[in-house]
Image 1 (cartoon, rainbow, N blue to C red):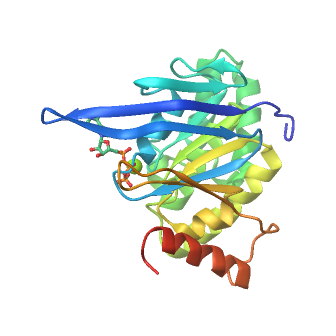
Image 2 (cartoon, rainbow, N blue to C red):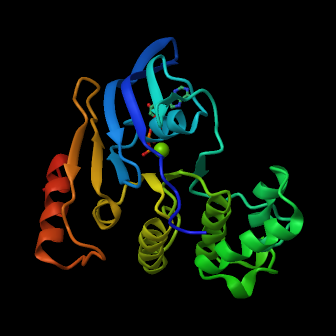
Length: 254
Ligand SMILES: Nc1ncnc2c1ncn2[C@@H]1O[C@H](COP(=O)(O)OP(=O)(O)OP(=O)(O)O)[C@@H](O)[C@H]1O
Ligand SMILES: [Mg+2]
């Protein structure tokens, strides 16, 4: 069940998006060009309001671009698609279904027979370390556990591309580090393309092949930083620390 995903290449071409706020036009994304490789982990950072969620929503097909666009494996994106799964900051589990029910749900609505759906769901529940909680109710889970259910639910439909908007943002520092390690492991085992938004620079360096920095000033250009470090990554290693300093400088904080 693992390691069989190919594809999941994303190309973003001359992508622009603005919103109208109080009668004024606000340019959020300006002619962004970027290719995300199949199986790559791209992490998006940027100041609050720089357009991270907007970009992710356009990739998910939940929001339309004003001009330019996104193609996945050469096919233009129009709306949501089965090759993409989205993980939000809050997992939004269905309270009337167990962990197993929540994870299997996406397969069942796609017409997969219940026994098959349950079997696949159990595989991913085990992958996120919750095998013993398959029959628990969402209200019985901690925040980190609920988020892991959300991740299992997204993986169960075997997307080529996983889109994550601050998936660990609501977790405490210790749980967060454990979940970052888990995400890194799942990403490499599932061979999935990951595009993730975070405001945690250390998390960005821990996970990313490349970090995309969205400009704060609307006239500014987006920047890409290659994180050329072996995995699993060591947060205390000097090169890791240097990347962190480089990102802090980008934000004018160092
Ligand atoms: N539906 C909308 N209507 C009007 N303006 C919007 C809409 N969605 C986003 N915006 C505006 O677009 C800009 C970018 O918003 P976005 O949510 O993409 O930022 P972000 O980088 O995700 O910020 P944060 O780090 O706070 O989550 C903001 O100025 C916001 O006010
Ligand atoms: Mg956001």
